[in-house]
Length: 324
Ligand SMILES: O=C(O)CCC(=O)C(=O)O
Image (cartoon, rainbow, N blue to C red; front, side, top):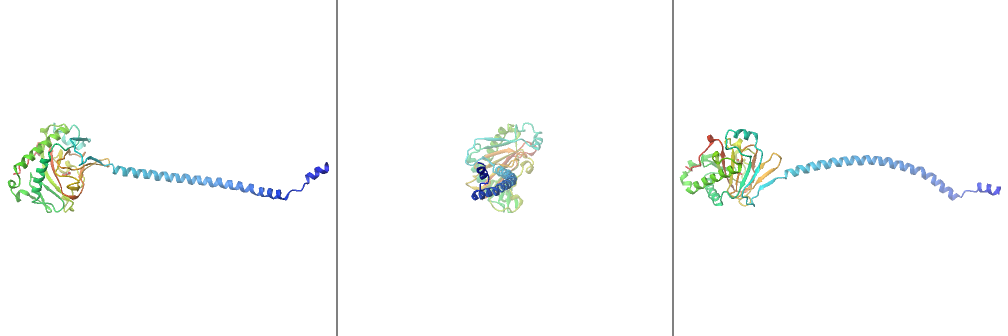
């Protein structure tokens, strides 16, 4: 037995098993090292992942901001499309403090709310046609070199070349205007006065026609003087001191008779409210800082409109143009 047991103890080791053991003895520490390395690497990767995520997050935030800005600049609202027939549509905007201050002195003329109105059924197409023909007859005597001409039948001012001339020095009014023109102009003026009074809840008799009242004719010619640069944002109360209520009567059609030339309200909140002109479309608005606006550059054709505006101050009233 003793021999057997000692034999068992001294049993010679199988060389194959030794090799395997040796292999194992070598493999165990290398796995640990690899594990450690892996963990270390993983820690590094975690850091890198976190950094990448932060960079990605920042990029996303930046893109989102850009997208928002882009979205805002594309937030323009076509308030009055030339495809629509608008019975009457109104929008309220808070009155500017300077406008309210100015108008306080004229009771009966203070708007319930400032804002805008557009109406397609107040002026008839026939009335617009008569005024369009009258404007065209007038502009045959003069036109600006630079694509923006005006004709003021009240004062006689007419764009010619780079200056203004008095149309009544070129032709007798009686030869230029027909009785129908005068009656149409008066009827249109009365209708506008009525629309403004009801839209802004004021007394019709508190409104007076004011200077300047003019026809405009715009083309895509390059500007020759500053007077041709109609596309700058402006506030009517600043440009024309006597205005309290501005009205515009369009005499031909955006998209058909001309391209470009849309009327744009430049809102404070970085977007635009767009009005597309169409024949006999009437728009009206309070003339203060609540309604900054411009006309988009005309890109083709001829655009005709009439600016017919009102004051609350009787001292700044003018008579209907008598066409002398
Ligand atoms: O013709 C228009 O639509 C606007 C004209 C205008 O802004 C202006 O005469 O001050």
